[in-house]
Image 1 (cartoon, rainbow, N blue to C red):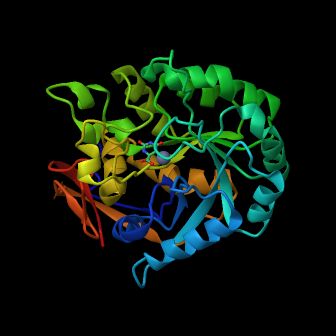
Image 2 (image 1 turned 135 degrees about the horizontal axis):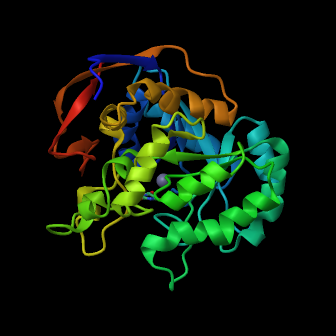
Length: 347
Ligand code: DOR
Ligand code: ZN
């Protein structure tokens, strides 16, 4: 481990977050806004954000939830469906409303019922996006019932992602929240138009965290955490210094009651201590000097956006993560809840 006690880095961004809507939006947005200058906001609301007008209106609601005096820019995404019109997507990008489009394979995860049933249905949209330089954000899991849930990402690479990248090499693709060695190998082998986000939870936990000693719903998210060898491959990738990997928390808040249920929702709410969580991993890997690139440089460089001005400072000290946090009236269990974490973000 390194011996630094204080780490100051350029202000980071979160390239993948769920802020929800209504009361929860107001409860969770401040956690993201206090750490990150910008965030890619997921469109899997009910109903999903599929139009330019809906994204504009949602962006306004997000901005209303940002505490006064904090400078935070939500970057909106277009939820792709089988019937998305390429020209609407291009217009939203041109007007600065959509930063990227999100591909959810139908029924892959929370809020994906309106997602894409066959990638062939959106080829004209993807071609248009490639033309205008608009990134495609991919939830990379197949949904076939005969594929084991732990294999869904690896099979998606073979059946969908590799053919897509081969067919449209100019398209910028972010392979979101990667969870496997196979995903790392794919990203490494692809050209510089393919990048990936990595969440804190997939760097910290393997599937034992969900299942050993009792079933632990707060460690359940999608894609589900895999075996230890995969976690180690992700830690190596994230801390490697490669410009292809960047910070995307996939913070996905659900009420305690929706998680602790006979059919609990997928999603880990990591926003309250996200940067601290990543810092702990980079520290354990003796790679604190690479945190800034991962958190604050690789993402904007990939998206073609300016780097943030300003800095944030982390200090090494024990911080108790509360067992639950109140999100404007909704109790939610945060990632690392009820334990200590070794870094603290200065106010
Ligand atoms: O665990 C997850 N939760 N994975 C997703 O892809 C969606 C997210 C959510 O919206 O709750
Ligand atoms: Zn997500």
